[in-house]
Length: 276
Image (cartoon, rainbow, N blue to C red; front, side, top):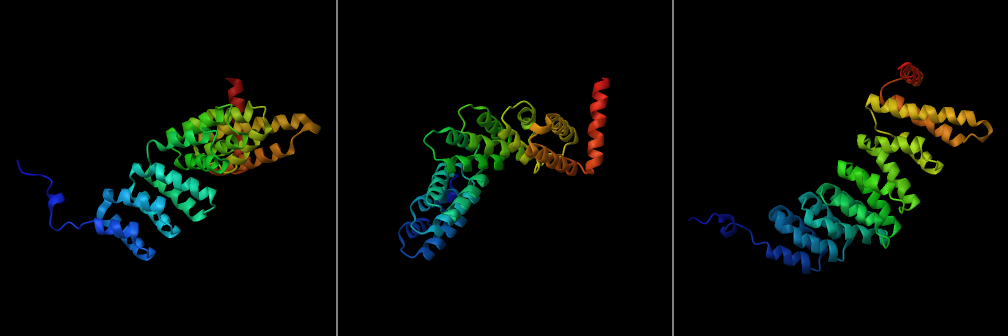
């Protein structure tokens, strides 16, 4: 049988070892930068391991930043843990550039395991606050079904730190994901915690929800909150009333209606439901 692995034996295939050695050993960071670029172009998946070493060990921040970018562009899930470690280190050492680039690389790779890993990071009692907060933000940026479910799990977990829960609520609303709708409505109308209610209202003022049926369901909840606050009179929470009004205006804008017309439609929907 003819050997099908012709590529591996081709005399024209460039030897990557000299590039790997330059990346690992050359004292000139500009040469290391060039070697990383050439490895990325020529090596593809074979460039992953050398780039991971550069991300973890290179003394120059520009090489570490570039390695993170290239790993993100390669999209190999093998880089996930190393990128998370580099992100953690960047947060601890306040290296904002590496933090930004490792986050973008993680989002580019789209590892199927990343949402679960991020949830575990958030729930790890030994993990420091900024890393947990960044993990929450990453889940919100991914915004797929699995990430949304992990945000919901974090919010519902009674052991979750209050500030982390608040951040998760914000990210959940920002996703505009329909599977989050029921929890959002519960947090608006059933929770006795005014802090979390205000978090939801602030997030809704930036909501991406554009589906009319969803928007009007949320609008009904907001209308109820505004009316309940009016009934409280001297005990009225002015901040909740203001935030609810701002969120209502954003919802109206999302579906292309003037605020007055949006309110009229909400009242019409309510009257129709009462008749039924």
